[in-house]
Amino acid sequence: MNEPLRRTIGTAWAFRTRVEREAAERFARLGPAIASWDAASPVVALMERAAGDERRHAAFCAELAGRYGDAVGSEWPAAASIAPAGLAPREALLYEVVACCCITETESVATVATLLADEPEPTVREVLHQIAKDEVVHGRMGWAHLARETRAIDISFVSRFVPAMLSGTVGDGLFAPASAEPDEGEFARHGILATARKREIFVRTLEEVVLPGLEQFGIDTAPARAWLLARNG
Image (cartoon, rainbow, N blue to C red; front, top):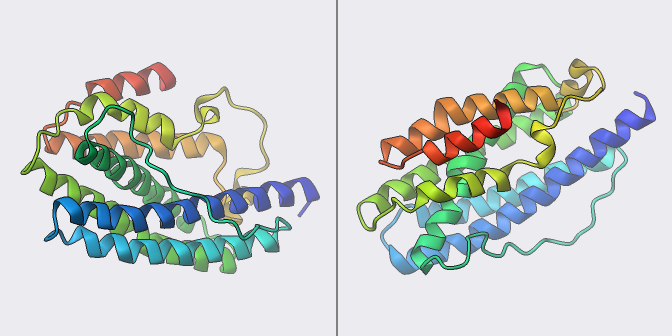
């Protein structure tokens, strides 16, 4: 493997480490917050479990980053609320759960499943397998919370905020014009998707899973579809 490719892969796994650490802190905070409104919710225990899952994932990712030459520090990022100002506390909590679980975790499951199908290196495959089986549950707990909140509060406000959730999920580069990248197969063997393929999976999962899922709860997805059309044509 040439050095530039090695650095690119190491950087990608270091970034994943930070994402997993932030998710661990967020889930640890969201569980008690949900309990303050809905103490009987099974999602509270799932959030606690998910925080532990993400801590394990972070350790796996950090080890892989190190193998590719990118040492990850020991700092754990804070996970302050990502909800827009002006939302009531319970609405802000729902915003975070929808953004982080119904959208981000659902998209992550699709990405990791694709990478597993590409026959990655054995060590990478084991890490991806561990992540995949947990993140299916993390996505489901978001939908479970949304289902409970549908019966408790008016969730129609979510519609206008889905574009902001999507913008927070993906970087600006996802929809940028294609640029030259290393061989897609070489990327995939080390657990990384080329940008064009990443975009394809993101769009397909959004159109086939996330948006229909939101619509099942009566959430108008027209703003989200307009957001996607403006970026993906």
